[in-house]
Length: 232
Image (cartoon, rainbow, N blue to C red; front, side, top):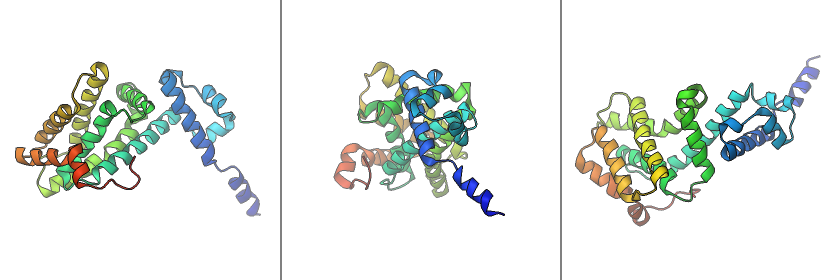
């Protein structure tokens, strides 16, 4: 008697391929026309799936939007962790996270759709924070980990790593937006300015900051470090 329900459950389990297709097409729609252009009907038209297939994976359009931002954040987090993996200490790891995020403004190899999705996510921080909070938590996780480790080692004077991470993200994002708007900042000067500002705010001594910035510069990484496996 129990075998029939079990077979039915397996038959109607959500298909990972369907979910991936929905997320992919939703991201493309948002990249092309902004979040306002995203509708369930539009996604289903792009994927050639039915309403039942959509609701097997997402309870609502808001759930889709949240999952879409979270997937984007996971991709970005993997990239940031690769950048941070070569750091010698928490100071260098924080500097590497900042440097990695600044790639959005200065690195032409970063996909344009990631830039557009980042803008859309930032616009929702005040309009609908519940949609993007999981994504921001994912992206800030490696930074928070480094801040906690640095506090434990006594190199950071902060008491709340989570709040410090948000402050660093705010400073970095303001720089990214300014570069997108004006496009006239020197990458080396801007990178060092933002890293110096954030590390001083964490209580790092000037000599330690200078050492971290010298070691984390692109030229230093090329001379002293091997490229991590799988990095772009």
